[in-house]
Length: 137
Image (cartoon, rainbow, N blue to C red; front, side):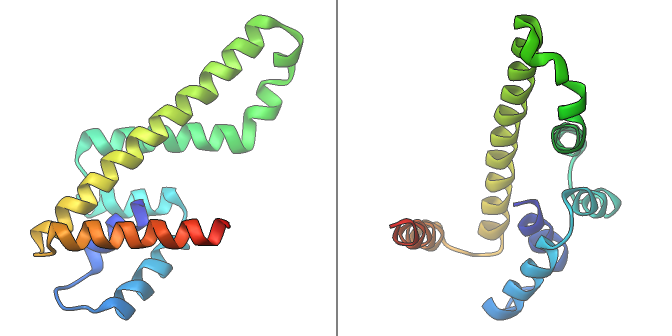
């Protein structure tokens, strides 16, 4: 979602069209979250609070992916260790969801400021959910 937000606030121009916008979004989604966050910060496109929260979750994500196994080796051998590990992973999950909701709200605000009707946003979201549902079946 951060990649989409970056495209909307930094790359997309009025009248860009769906194909060009989709190309920009695909290119942006190939970048890491860290790279996208650096670009948002460098261009001053994210406020201090959101930027700080995104950097913190990026650190937690990196810990989870790269260091959690080594750091948590003893978690299975003690209740305290297991409780601490579960609490940290739960915290990462909750903050990730909160950040996703925050960035989604900002994306919606951005497209509304550019003249996209709320009805269109809602209809498109429902169509996307329906496509996702059909893909799961």
